[in-house]
Amino acid sequence: MASGSGTKNLDFRRKWDKDEYEKLAEKRLTEEREKKDGKPLQPVKRELLRHRDYKVDLESKLGKTIVITKTTPQSEMGGYYCNVCDCVVKDSINFLDHINGKKHQRNLGMSMRVERSTLDQVKKRFEVNKKKMEEKQKDYDFEERMKELREEEEKAKAYKKEKQREKKRRAEEDLTFEEDDEMAAVMGFSGFGSTKKSH
Image (cartoon, rainbow, N blue to C red; front, top):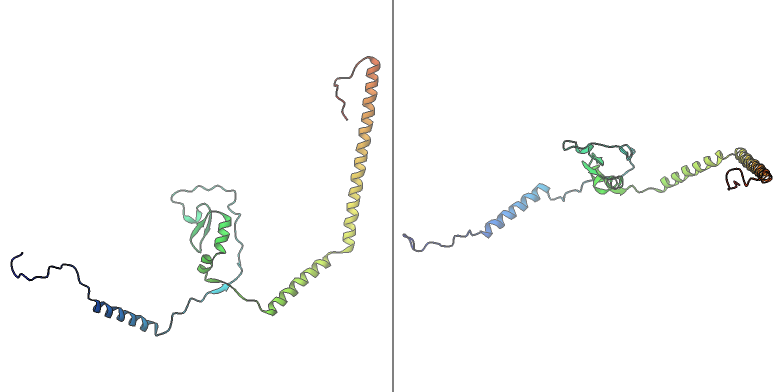
Protein backbone atom coordinates (compact mmCIF):
# COMPACT_ATOMS: atom_id res chain seq x y z
CA MET A 1 0.00 0.00 0.00
CA ALA A 2 0.91 3.58 -0.38
CA SER A 3 2.36 5.63 2.38
CA GLY A 4 0.05 7.74 4.50
CA SER A 5 -3.47 6.92 5.60
CA GLY A 6 -4.40 3.33 5.04
CA THR A 7 -8.19 3.74 4.65
CA LYS A 8 -8.46 5.65 1.35
CA ASN A 9 -11.38 5.05 -1.08
CA LEU A 10 -9.94 2.83 -3.81
CA ASP A 11 -13.10 3.02 -5.98
CA PHE A 12 -12.04 5.47 -8.72
CA ARG A 13 -15.30 5.30 -10.70
CA ARG A 14 -17.53 8.35 -10.82
CA LYS A 15 -20.65 8.19 -8.69
CA TRP A 16 -23.88 9.81 -9.97
CA ASP A 17 -26.02 11.64 -7.49
CA LYS A 18 -29.54 10.56 -8.53
CA ASP A 19 -31.29 13.08 -6.31
CA GLU A 20 -29.38 15.97 -7.86
CA TYR A 21 -30.23 14.91 -11.44
CA GLU A 22 -33.90 14.38 -10.57
CA LYS A 23 -34.03 17.97 -9.27
CA LEU A 24 -32.40 19.24 -12.51
CA ALA A 25 -34.92 17.35 -14.65
CA GLU A 26 -37.87 18.72 -12.68
CA LYS A 27 -36.46 22.24 -12.95
CA ARG A 28 -36.13 21.90 -16.74
CA LEU A 29 -39.71 20.61 -17.08
CA THR A 30 -41.11 23.50 -15.02
CA GLU A 31 -39.18 26.02 -17.14
CA GLU A 32 -40.59 24.48 -20.35
CA ARG A 33 -44.12 24.63 -18.93
CA GLU A 34 -43.66 28.29 -18.01
CA LYS A 35 -42.52 29.09 -21.58
CA LYS A 36 -45.67 27.50 -23.00
CA ASP A 37 -47.83 29.30 -20.42
CA GLY A 38 -49.72 26.10 -19.94
CA LYS A 39 -51.04 26.12 -23.55
CA PRO A 40 -50.17 23.38 -26.03
CA LEU A 41 -48.26 24.53 -29.10
CA GLN A 42 -50.48 25.40 -32.07
CA PRO A 43 -49.86 23.39 -35.23
CA VAL A 44 -48.70 25.32 -38.29
CA LYS A 45 -51.71 26.56 -40.27
CA ARG A 46 -51.25 25.91 -43.98
CA GLU A 47 -53.33 27.05 -46.94
CA LEU A 48 -55.64 24.68 -48.74
CA LEU A 49 -54.43 23.13 -51.98
CA ARG A 50 -55.10 25.32 -55.04
CA HIS A 51 -54.56 25.24 -58.81
CA ARG A 52 -51.19 26.20 -60.26
CA ASP A 53 -51.23 29.64 -61.84
CA TYR A 54 -48.31 28.83 -64.13
CA LYS A 55 -47.63 26.31 -66.88
CA VAL A 56 -45.11 23.58 -66.07
CA ASP A 57 -42.25 23.77 -68.58
CA LEU A 58 -41.29 20.23 -69.53
CA GLU A 59 -40.29 20.72 -73.17
CA SER A 60 -37.85 23.66 -73.22
CA LYS A 61 -34.77 21.47 -72.70
CA LEU A 62 -36.06 18.59 -74.81
CA GLY A 63 -33.54 17.43 -77.42
CA LYS A 64 -30.84 19.91 -76.36
CA THR A 65 -27.27 19.02 -75.44
CA ILE A 66 -25.68 20.67 -72.39
CA VAL A 67 -22.04 20.48 -71.33
CA ILE A 68 -21.85 19.91 -67.57
CA THR A 69 -18.66 20.57 -65.61
CA LYS A 70 -17.79 20.45 -61.91
CA THR A 71 -18.45 24.18 -61.60
CA THR A 72 -21.88 24.09 -63.29
CA PRO A 73 -24.55 25.33 -60.85
CA GLN A 74 -27.12 22.78 -59.74
CA SER A 75 -29.96 24.61 -61.47
CA GLU A 76 -28.26 24.15 -64.87
CA MET A 77 -27.38 20.48 -64.39
CA GLY A 78 -29.10 17.82 -66.45
CA GLY A 79 -32.70 17.20 -65.47
CA TYR A 80 -35.47 19.34 -64.02
CA TYR A 81 -34.61 21.81 -61.26
CA CYS A 82 -37.10 22.73 -58.52
CA ASN A 83 -36.17 26.14 -57.12
CA VAL A 84 -38.62 25.82 -54.22
CA CYS A 85 -37.06 22.63 -52.83
CA ASP A 86 -33.58 23.23 -54.36
CA CYS A 87 -33.36 19.77 -55.91
CA VAL A 88 -32.80 18.25 -59.35
CA VAL A 89 -35.08 15.52 -60.70
CA LYS A 90 -33.83 13.47 -63.64
CA ASP A 91 -36.97 12.88 -65.73
CA SER A 92 -40.30 14.56 -66.41
CA ILE A 93 -42.53 11.95 -64.75
CA ASN A 94 -40.62 12.16 -61.48
CA PHE A 95 -40.61 15.97 -61.74
CA LEU A 96 -44.41 16.02 -62.04
CA ASP A 97 -44.65 13.58 -59.12
CA HIS A 98 -42.37 15.90 -57.11
CA ILE A 99 -44.27 19.15 -57.77
CA ASN A 100 -47.56 17.42 -56.96
CA GLY A 101 -46.11 15.76 -53.87
CA LYS A 102 -46.42 16.52 -50.17
CA LYS A 103 -42.87 17.83 -49.63
CA HIS A 104 -43.09 20.41 -52.43
CA GLN A 105 -46.58 21.56 -51.39
CA ARG A 106 -45.41 21.99 -47.79
CA ASN A 107 -42.48 24.10 -48.96
CA LEU A 108 -45.00 26.26 -50.83
CA GLY A 109 -46.99 26.61 -47.60
CA MET A 110 -49.94 24.46 -48.60
CA SER A 111 -51.43 21.35 -47.08
CA MET A 112 -52.66 18.45 -49.18
CA ARG A 113 -56.27 19.21 -48.26
CA VAL A 114 -58.62 20.57 -50.92
CA GLU A 115 -61.30 23.15 -50.26
CA ARG A 116 -64.68 21.53 -49.95
CA SER A 117 -67.13 22.75 -52.60
CA THR A 118 -70.53 24.03 -51.58
CA LEU A 119 -73.80 23.14 -53.28
CA ASP A 120 -74.01 26.60 -54.88
CA GLN A 121 -70.51 26.26 -56.38
CA VAL A 122 -71.39 22.88 -57.88
CA LYS A 123 -74.64 24.26 -59.36
CA LYS A 124 -72.80 27.22 -60.89
CA ARG A 125 -70.21 24.89 -62.43
CA PHE A 126 -73.00 22.76 -63.95
CA GLU A 127 -74.61 25.90 -65.41
CA VAL A 128 -71.32 27.06 -66.93
CA ASN A 129 -70.71 23.64 -68.50
CA LYS A 130 -74.29 23.52 -69.80
CA LYS A 131 -73.87 26.94 -71.47
CA LYS A 132 -70.65 25.75 -73.13
CA MET A 133 -72.44 22.69 -74.52
CA GLU A 134 -75.29 24.86 -75.86
CA GLU A 135 -72.82 27.19 -77.57
CA LYS A 136 -71.18 24.22 -79.27
CA GLN A 137 -74.58 23.03 -80.50
CA LYS A 138 -75.41 26.51 -81.83
CA ASP A 139 -72.13 26.53 -83.73
CA TYR A 140 -73.24 23.34 -85.45
CA ASP A 141 -75.15 24.82 -88.38
CA PHE A 142 -77.32 22.56 -90.55
CA GLU A 143 -76.64 24.36 -93.84
CA GLU A 144 -72.92 24.36 -93.23
CA ARG A 145 -73.00 20.63 -92.58
CA MET A 146 -74.99 20.00 -95.78
CA LYS A 147 -72.42 22.02 -97.72
CA GLU A 148 -69.61 19.89 -96.26
CA LEU A 149 -71.47 16.68 -97.20
CA ARG A 150 -71.94 17.90 -100.80
CA GLU A 151 -68.23 18.69 -101.06
CA GLU A 152 -67.35 15.23 -99.78
CA GLU A 153 -69.71 13.62 -102.32
CA GLU A 154 -68.15 15.66 -105.15
CA LYS A 155 -64.68 14.57 -104.09
CA ALA A 156 -65.81 10.93 -104.01
CA LYS A 157 -67.34 11.26 -107.52
CA ALA A 158 -64.17 12.87 -108.87
CA TYR A 159 -62.10 10.06 -107.36
CA LYS A 160 -64.33 7.40 -108.99
CA LYS A 161 -64.11 9.14 -112.39
CA GLU A 162 -60.33 9.26 -112.15
CA LYS A 163 -60.24 5.52 -111.37
CA GLN A 164 -62.46 4.76 -114.38
CA ARG A 165 -60.24 6.86 -116.66
CA GLU A 166 -57.20 5.02 -115.37
CA LYS A 167 -58.86 1.66 -116.11
CA LYS A 168 -59.61 2.79 -119.68
CA ARG A 169 -55.99 3.86 -120.21
CA ARG A 170 -54.74 0.47 -118.99
CA ALA A 171 -57.17 -1.36 -121.26
CA GLU A 172 -56.02 0.69 -124.29
CA GLU A 173 -52.37 0.00 -123.43
CA ASP A 174 -53.13 -3.74 -123.21
CA LEU A 175 -54.69 -3.59 -126.70
CA THR A 176 -51.61 -1.89 -128.16
CA PHE A 177 -49.37 -4.55 -126.59
CA GLU A 178 -51.54 -7.32 -128.08
CA GLU A 179 -51.33 -5.67 -131.50
CA ASP A 180 -47.54 -5.46 -131.15
CA ASP A 181 -47.43 -9.17 -130.25
CA GLU A 182 -49.47 -10.06 -133.34
CA MET A 183 -47.17 -7.95 -135.53
CA ALA A 184 -44.11 -9.65 -134.04
CA ALA A 185 -45.60 -13.10 -134.69
CA VAL A 186 -46.29 -12.17 -138.34
CA MET A 187 -42.71 -10.94 -138.75
CA GLY A 188 -41.30 -14.07 -137.11
CA PHE A 189 -40.14 -12.61 -133.81
CA SER A 190 -41.03 -14.07 -130.49
CA GLY A 191 -41.21 -10.59 -128.92
CA PHE A 192 -39.73 -7.12 -128.85
CA GLY A 193 -37.24 -7.28 -125.97
CA SER A 194 -38.74 -8.58 -122.75
CA THR A 195 -40.54 -11.87 -122.27
CA LYS A 196 -42.63 -10.40 -119.45
CA LYS A 197 -45.98 -8.85 -120.12
CA SER A 198 -46.87 -5.76 -118.13
CA HIS A 199 -50.49 -5.67 -116.99
